[in-house]
Length: 131
Length: 371
Image 1: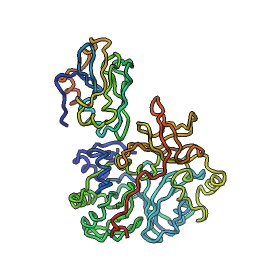
Image 2: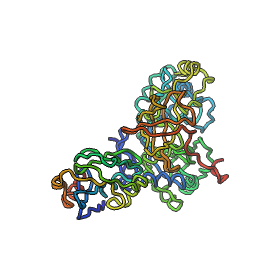
Image 3: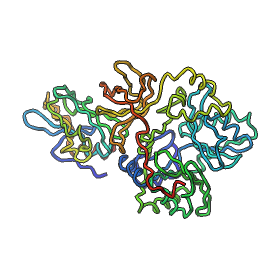
Image 4: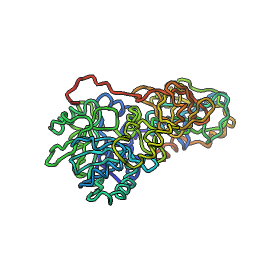
């Protein structure tokens, strides 16, 4: 399986990505590895703006034809924005997981938490170990 | 974990394999939605060798079967097949099965893989009253392949070089192929025209390859259990263990037409008669989501603030582009057009009860394959 893992992002073991933005915010979504495994994504449920997230706890749901899956917050903070395009057109997660298929932006509670995430190299090793 | 005779074929095709009632089965080869739509517009090839297969023979075969099923096997012509529930004394589904009449003293049964052991015991338990009768479990020595979709008649005729098209719906016959006899029936679980083909286990791979090669230019693709489920749901064909089990009776479901009270005694008849006289407390009906959300098995259903039942099956429906489902709910809530709510995780979402099936195939080409 050919997996796209961009160099400028950080990753979780549960296959979310996060991109550090300006002003203490970060954008998140699910990885190419995740979308390839889920295949046909037909539903995305995002948290409402203002909702608190806690690193490692569920913050969204994606559903393939077959089943529903929890998506976990990579970091703690407050949801600052959501991608309405992806709820209207869930297929964007399959087509462009790191671009048009982004999920939410989070106002970080503790930017230090980013240090706990996987680097692209670490994430590639994690994916290749088949977890 | 058991493997079907086609296990290596699925692996070579890079199928995503899942555990399904003791068997490792292909869930999907690529996209479930693509496989689903391919079956609707052209054809798909399914390995369904996990389904249980029995041969019931002897002078007692017919009366035994007739006593255990709710449908009427006396109406069967030689080579004809029927769908029927198998009920317990309370009228609850032990299973739903296909009964093929091969001749007066020989019947083939196809049962759900999850129920193979239970059904075999059920038949054997009642067999002593119907001697002579022999019940053979032929599941592992045979394979079963389903070819489904509007192009399947043409594909199978070309592949086997036999006049398969003369088979009518719900009829089966034997056809010579490659020095052996195949049993082919015009049956399926997708809502499309199609065939199910029995072969000896050691011919399965060659048969699969021959059909696949012959069908490629007509759009034939392999299809897995994922699309089999969405296809059957759109056609409103019941799934044992989801839509019904031993606590649900056929009268409560869309299969009420398969209970033939006038055929004479059968197991469950008394309970079902009583239920018919007292009226049904609940009904299995179809619904489509109005709000965005995908209904799944066991989600609670509400009418207003009152909990009225549960979702039995639900999915995104690729043919209608809607989210649809079946639910078993209190009869007074089950009227077509009613607005209900489905609880999905922590929220309730609007849905509407609709007529089923969700999808009916168009029979446009007045075509030579149906009659």
